[in-house]
Image 1 (cartoon, rainbow, N blue to C red):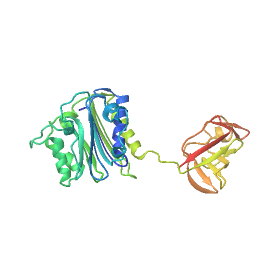
Image 2: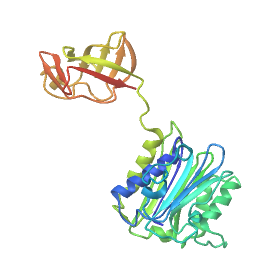
Image 3: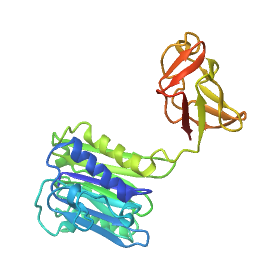
Image 4: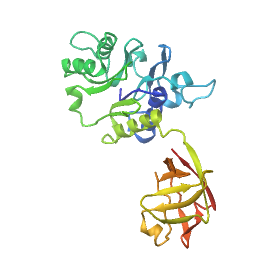
Length: 313
């Protein structure tokens, strides 16, 4: 079992799917075969899907159509996990991602259900501890510490948003292991990734985690839009900013870049995250940057147009 991904947060169910799909596109090695997916839905129901071959392209179907994403009930789950590797792993595949709405779920890589010193599957032992009220970090650390030569790494996601991942000493001695644990403090979203035997191992885990976190928190919808017309004045100022009238039409743009504000060269005259003022009030910051041409201190062309709508958040 080569890659495990666990997540907690808004749309965690979609996040683990997107993250695995990214690993399949970028990674080379034992990937794109079996997948077992588990999530805990809005009402505490277990949501499961699995495939032995094809990875995310066959994990979910819509009638006779493959290559579709998870249904809405799966995608919107706040607790989710997957494990995947090459094709044709021993059944039942659900054993690799045990879940219980009273505690959370456990995934990982290598052989998560390998038998521990107490005679229990290591991933099942962690889940029992979650159900008993232990947080993810303590449950994983206790089980892994007790089984240093167990051939697995474990990821636990508890129902309170706790997430933790750790490899045993045996797995840490491998030369092909990747690990990532990323959290967004503002939203509480968190994702953990463990993998082996998928190249490039120094960077893949961080990429996969970043994709999952972006799915959960993303950039959000724009707060609003402003319009910049050809002919709008651009000049040096104390900050990069777009100053608009009450209707949201730019009256002037300021920049801190002399190449733009003094020399009027081709460039990104409205810089990413420039302040947006409407009627003198700061309302947000720009979300992209057009390439502009300037003539005599005024905009001539903005990304090939003479009028441009720009979003802010």
